[in-house]
Length: 112
Length: 113
Image (cartoon, rainbow over all chains, first blue to last red):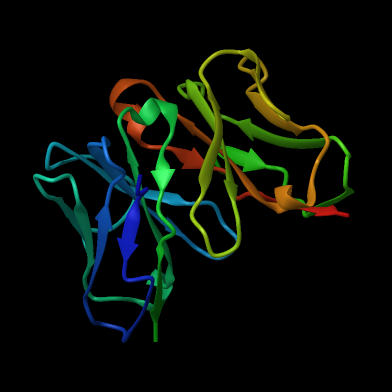
């Protein structure tokens, strides 16, 4: 049973560019959340998608947007990249978020 | 001040030791409490979750929650070198807020053979 899969695994972008990260949730999971993890810190909640709608959002600017498709897969888009956006971006899925998430291995984004 | 504070570590123990990992929180709306383990270059892996005060045991792991003190702990018995990782506590609220987990910054544990 495949867990959460994310692509790509690594990405290097130039400041000002736009990036799209992709996530396929674990089979049976319908809720997808995205987190940003800076080096040496815990994951920070970006937003959560359920039934193709953004259900909750963390303290991130509008440059961060997302989408969920009918098959529950999801995309995270970041516009006008800043150097400070360099981080590990984690996708997590669940069937009931109160009982914790299954995380993917993440996409490491480097902005130069 | 952060909503969730985690003992920063790093922590280094000999194989077989009992390990105690701790977090405190300030938001009384937190109702669900989780512990994750994160190996280098990997995503966090859920170890334990609980939603009530008291102890929950799973093999060598025991999660303890004290809501009155806003304090949670994870105990690892008979620690093994394979337990060497970063441990993250996480918490969330009820209903619609259950989806937003707030994490501590992690404690890095090294278990020496």
